[in-house]
Each structure stands twice: as structure tokens, then as C-alpha cells.
Length: 134
Image (cartoon, rainbow, N blue to C red; front, side, top):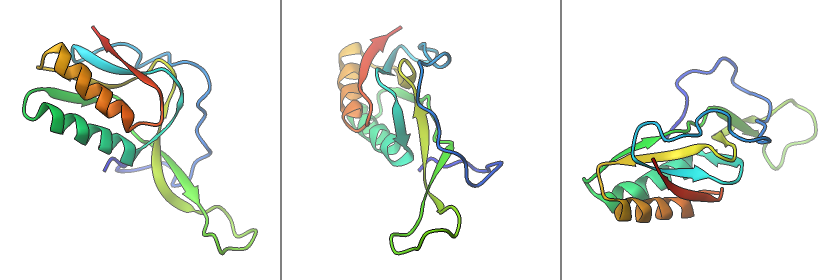
């Protein structure tokens, strides 16, 4: 799973999802890409699930780039704990996805296969997305 090797601070404030993507909004590495149409948090587990679906579909055919990384920790307190006592422990990590940001890129297969693989990956993600070409 994708987790950061080292963080400056173990617990952070909740990441902001408002606004449109100003960077990471064009196809850079591959020929085909999956672009987010809505904003939200994408967890490390969701990214890994989408990556596995794409890898299985293209078998050994193409190369896949993941363009977002889950840097932000999300904390949670136990359900039976009382008020106070500080912030909870980090439970999982999320990548902040803004509308217009590129999630995945692909190269080395034909457009029809890439579109099908990206659609399968899009089902695994909590944001609406669309397939684009360079």
C-alpha cells in the first residue's frame, strides 16, 4: 500500500478539497489518462485497488503511472473513548484530488484497451472521472 516514508508531523489538519487543480492537470508521461471530474479524498486502499484492476486487465501489455500520492493522514478516535484526551491516532492516508487532476496514466497498449482498463479503475474510486488522451 502507498504510505509516506517519513512525515514532518504525524497528525495534520484535515486537507481541503475546494477549488480546481492548478497543477497535475495535463497528461505528462503516457498517452492515455484518467482525469477527475469531482473533488474528494482518495485513500491509499482505493488507489491500490484501482491499480490492481488496471494491471490485471492489461496483463503485461502497458505501463501505468499513478499521478497522486496519499500524503495526508486521517485520524480517528476509538468508539468507546470519552470526550477529551486529544486527537486520535492516524488510521489511513488520503490523497487530495481536486477537479481536473490526473489520477492515472497509461502507455503501451491501444486506445480501446486503455479506455476499458481506465473505466474499470474509475469504478473503484470515490470521484467521478473520465478517460482522456494526449
